[in-house]
Length: 280
Image (tube, rainbow, N blue to C red; front, side, top):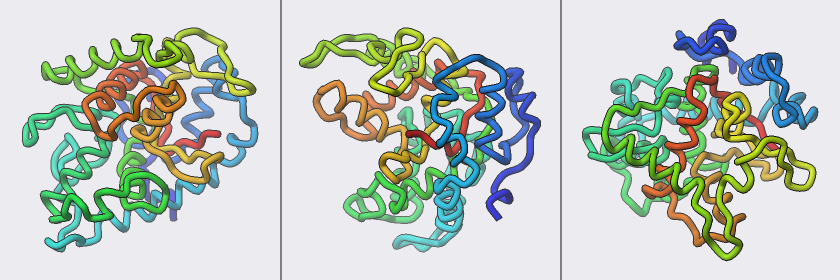
């Protein structure tokens, strides 16, 4: 059963800004609580998506990821249960909403994708050129199955990326500069789309970065993209935004991508994550 993947939590506690005791049982319920708490056309613009969320294809990807996470794999024939995502080996509950974060064993600030690659290589023994490592986009990849399962263990919990280490603060601040810096052939920046309330691209209402209750949905990845018929990650969203602004291609997992994700996660601090979400 899909619901066994989550432990129940009162959503009112998450909305009140308190520390969540555990993941919620239903991404659609997390979104509905946000909708009920604020007036936002961005949150309600797609009736079809709201209707689809309880039966989102992403929920099947979560189940596939659970099996993959516990399966002994790679040359070393071990599972990912020994991987530390920031809260101790094998502890997934609440880990995703505290990423990106600094990891002592690598000396780097890492997001979920980077940390997965690190553990698949160091624990399971996968080589750099193994498809399990190199294929990072799409519902049919190991990466997205694993990311969906790991992220789902933080559904409904509040975004709370740590800012204790100097590198965590430095990456977050670099992300803020990148978010507002205009460049590229069209002199664009992220704020061109997300710096004001009520902006639209064609029929799509855009999320406003300074409205945390809108922004938490905007950054709730992994999310099933209906238009792509695939589950997508935060790294894919960053890459797609850079392509739309006609910037040079961004390197997935680079410090630049981590900086942007660090900043945008900090903007949603204290709001419940919708994991996995469903977007147009």
